[in-house]
Length: 102
Image (cartoon, rainbow, N blue to C red; front, side, top):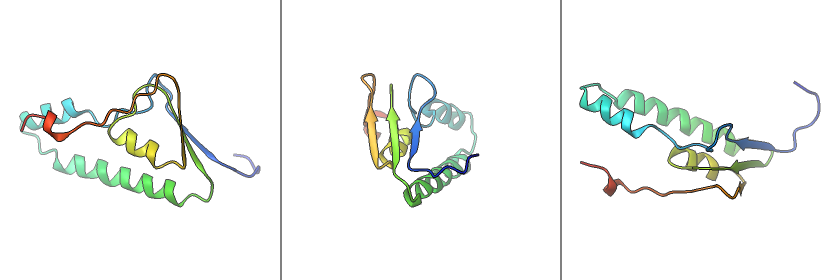
């Protein structure tokens, strides 16, 4: 820790991609195997909501530096920032529920 003042928060991915959200294939496989995934998904949603509220209430600007894929919950996280800086490799896909089997 430092006693220096904080002027901004930088939010960036540490891998090739910023964040691609939840693993939909994992949830689908768990559901087909008979697991009750509602509780786990609910916990993930509440945690993400709390994180977004914390970012929104910060007294400093939040900057998201996006490289690679930024989708799902990761897209929500990036868009919660005050400023998004997108690298040349940044991709922001918007998925639709109609693409999933029902």
